[in-house]
Image (tube, rainbow, N blue to C red; front, side, top):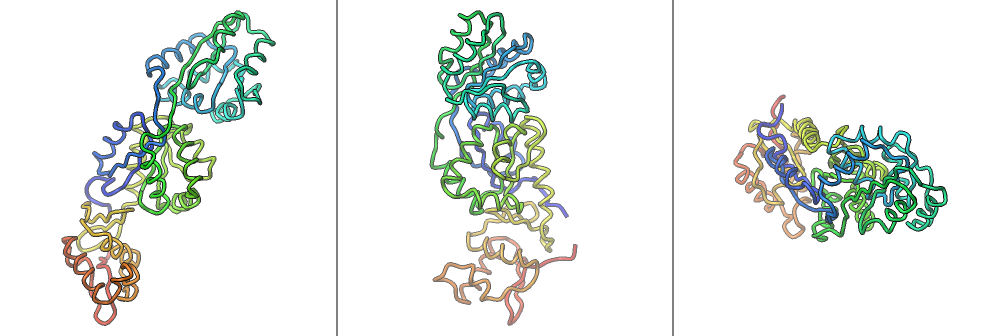
Length: 371
């Protein structure tokens, strides 16, 4: 039996994006989700989308002989921008006969994640080594695409142009520290300890930043365990964004192509399938990370009431003794009278007085109906 109402009702979803976060949040909120904004990076736009896409189209129309990737984060951002504009297949086709030159192992890794191979890597990770290598080989008459990130070209465009190359410069967004570091950290901790139902990613750079903080806080193992068990959904907008998360060993859901609409549909399907719940006389009960949803309605429970209901739901109609339920309460309130009072408040606040049964001389049980 499915939950009535919006499919994402009661789901706490953490959006790690800075760009396009409002568009994604609105689509999810219309379907009942509770949105928490915790951007993993801030976006520093050097060029707008239109300019980057126009430069990409120019490269598709006049394919490169050489592609220079100056940073891993920037190359991934460029690939994602092309994918979002529906140009990725055309761009990869334009790359078919090109040589790839990487400024260091991170740029090489980004090239490989896009299904391509680096022909040469500047192990010193300097633009100077990369420049000197290509100039020594000779670039006269060649079409050279240079992907930039951050502060621009480091003199690469000028050097290659002076040597006779036809240079196509592609300046991708820059990324800075999260605008709200506290929210970034808080919602990584919540993902680890059970305070979120889903964490959503729309860029590989944000995924890398989020993973770095999760490792620093020692939270990654707990997050991986929750994702593997299905308690936490980690979702990415496409395979490029998912790449760093998958490499870190996380269970990740993603559509085949970069589309926000496809991500929303994937989440609706995921949570509809897991929202069968427990059948009660008042309707299906579904436990989410921080809420309980009864017949499509979020119950206004206290934290203690939520934990008691979570314990009863886990028992699936079996009786829990007062002692077992007392273990859920804060230590100072853990007597039998406190359990009885908490059960009464739960019944009153839920608006479903028959949701919890009293089993005389034994304890309490969730009222479960036959399916």
